[in-house]
Amino acid sequence: MALDYLAFWSASNAEALQSTPEFYTPRVTFHGRSMSAQALFDEKRRFVQRWPVRDYRHRSDSIRTACDPAGDSCTVRSVFDFDAANPARSRRSRGVATLELVVTFANERPFIAAESSIVHDRGRSEASVSLEETPDE
Image (cartoon, rainbow, N blue to C red):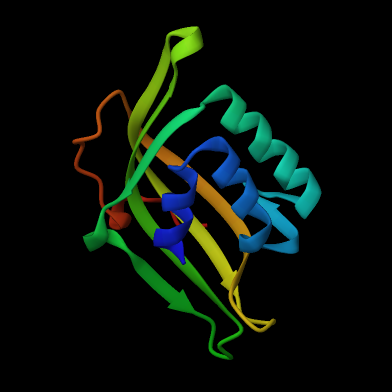
């Protein structure tokens, strides 16, 4: 699911926004803020308008998963390289970040209940970053 998530956000704006409702629970904690799925969609829409060209690449050796004892949810963390651009504004952002998704299994399939990310390095995508270097929440 985490791999699919970044692949969708690397797709066209229309495809990324169309897939957004498929990933999330009706209430989501997004970067520490609780919001409705509609409010999240609105935020994601603003983001793709700001950065219409996006490429997110998981570092496959960095994916870590920790599940709660009852198996109701799992936290997935992954380091990824990103490159986002807005050619109309001659803007570009690239670097290395960690994605953290809390995935719940309360329904028939997994959904994201919480999402956050931390940027470790801007301007380079080759930086050496591991999950051990990320702060624990």
